[in-house]
Image (cartoon, rainbow, N blue to C red; front, side, top):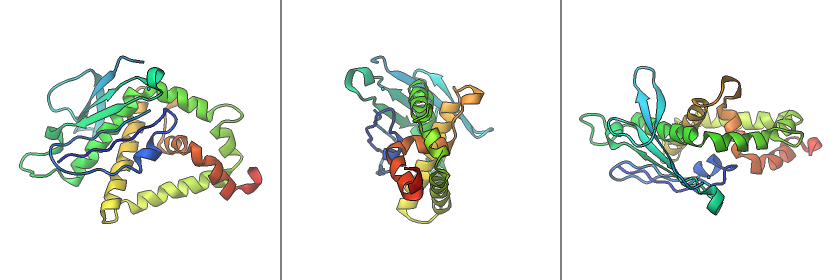
Length: 224
């Protein structure tokens, strides 16, 4: 089984594109994403703790029963783009005796890939998120003055959470993408100080910044 998705992004636009990615299935398992980051690549190996149900990362390539390996090209200063390549371990995906990985293992693989990306790109994400949210013209100030817009976004996320268990290929992929987002939040927070941690809502707002003005205009016209 192979899962591939290629997405280009700048540091300020990540998952809105990933949410539109379509993954194809065949053999073995690879999850690939291209992201818009200095020239020495960052490589991390992601591991799964079956007891806690969480992930952790180690620097560099490793062998064994890892969940995923994530490579960040760090070429943003040269090309204006970073490329993030993530590969889920086939041995992690397939439990003994399984011809194909279960939906639950696929979800874990997506979450592992997201964890690796959030962990490996923490510094650039932190800088970009601060630039996006802080200051009098930042998203925090805008959304504070337009609570209806924030409510609309929260309702949008609740709708996705409720609908993700519908039975179709679309909703299966939605479920996988939400797992990837949750993994990114967990990977970012594994490096962030306790008072600077991210949550899913803030990450989604960060990635919706190009659309926030339209959302505020539609839901809170008096604030525009």
